[in-house]
Amino acid sequence: MAGLGGHSFAGYGAELMATIGRDTATVDANRQAGETIVDSLDLKRQQLSGVSLDEEAADLAKWQQSYQAAARYMQTVNRVTEMALGLLAG
Image (tube, rainbow, N blue to C red; front, top):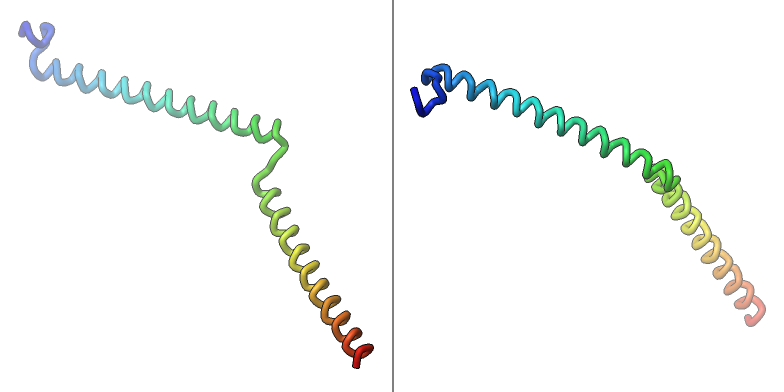
């Protein structure tokens, strides 16, 4: 058949499916290669920046607890000071 590149309808369909399969495999391989490159570059970026998001989150929690402890300490000092001034004035 002239419109099918010299193939029968079934042959043309088989060739089309084979082409789609090859193209799909190529696209999948390219996607996987791209993901590998992105992962590698992200790892390099983290190594160069020296920043670990997990470590930063742990440090943030530690600093927050330290701040809260310091705030409680200051409240206690404030209460003791008020009591002492109240006794001296009283």
